[in-house]
Image (tube, rainbow, N blue to C red):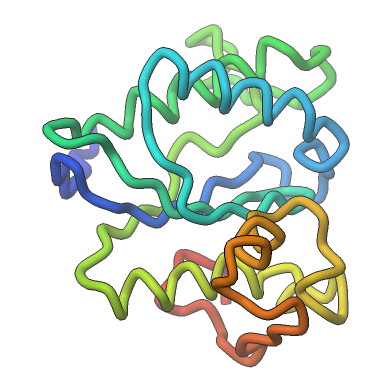
Amino acid sequence: MTSYRRNFVPGGSVFFTVNLAERRRSLLTMHVELLRSVFRETHRRHPFTIDAIVILPDHLHTVLTMPDGDADFATRWRLIKSAFSRGMARSERVSASRAAKGERGIWQRRNWEHTIRDENDFARHVDYVHINPVKHGLVKQVCEWKHSSFHRHVEDGIYPVDWAGDPSDDGSDYGERR
């Protein structure tokens, strides 16, 4: 069995990319209310702070901060993924290995995670989260994508509504496919 190294930092901030198994599906935006509900329920049971999030059709990016003394983001993602899957009708392809384990085929098994190192790293990753719909050609301006914490950041005075970010960023530091 493969051994994955994870950097568990109690109270730390972590950037995540979480993908659907079938990247051509649009389940996350089609069922965004279910996903939001799952996040709320998981947060109620296992608190965390969503510093930034963007929900795209086939993947999401987020920067989460764990509570002081808590580094267990793996449990939170397990709960989010499993509750979302339970809320979906069974229509996905399921590989033989997943079927043998009784798993659904909605999510990729793993995700990309990056422990935030400092304030500059935090700001770069929050910017990356928000520019992502432009990077993927889904909208021309960040403010046009409704499934994003960008709008909360505008209300809080962090970004101007016409913020453009850097859509030329290739994502090589952020768990994106090249």
